[in-house]
Length: 336
Image (cartoon, rainbow, N blue to C red; front, side, top):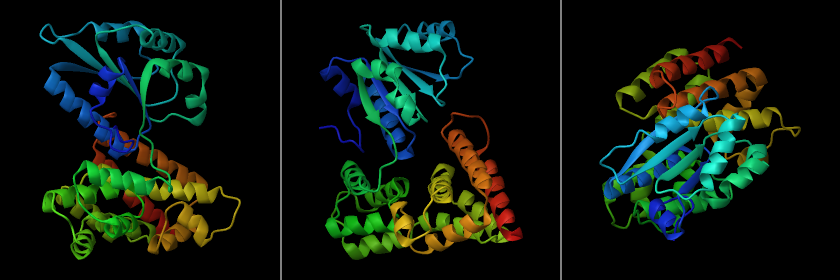
């Protein structure tokens, strides 16, 4: 049975259901990486060539069709990976995709809609498009889904912990799937498939590099520019993934913008609803008072840009951009 938060054997599922198309919507890093790793593994095993297409509004239907013709003579079939990073798609491309999904093809297609709006997912065109496709949600788990998501990731990586251990992992990762995944992978490497006791679990998590990322966030919000630069440098030297550290800031600033526009006053309940606990509540309160809504929105745009660079969807140096972003936030906070 295919697990929602740990997709696997996707191409086999396609074959069983006699389909050629997968549509994935959302940009949660753990789920996107899991989907892509599973598909790459199957392509290698089945000798399927992969052809990547990143769409922008300037790309014409003829240009897309030409990419479909660049198939290797030695491959039995090709998997076309089409990524839409924005919501704006030309009518001719929409018509072409809808026609494509209605045809029987020897090739395989996976379409990623990275940042779809709710209106886009409810549109008549999208509803018609997905009629003959396998649909996978790659959106961030809601607070009610996070336990199931983390539990499925532990099963996926064959990490054996009991209910108490699972609860500790959820709480110490602050309900964030990206950082839970980082810890789960580390536990998988250290303990293989052996049962993990609660004491060992707490010790390993409390000594993880995850907290360095939260310390960096704390230095930024406290306006400690020297410590901010030092923390970024140390994280880079330790070969941390920028997408994971950037994920902390994405989680934090997404919560900030919701709190900024909330008609209700700040409360413990409003913080917990957004998965902000402990010291992070103090940081959020300080940031809400000192950062304008415009500054928070611009920060989210920069975080999105760094995320795209980290995923290879946009050119640039992720660490350079992240360093500059962190320093700018800490400088703004130090002056107010």
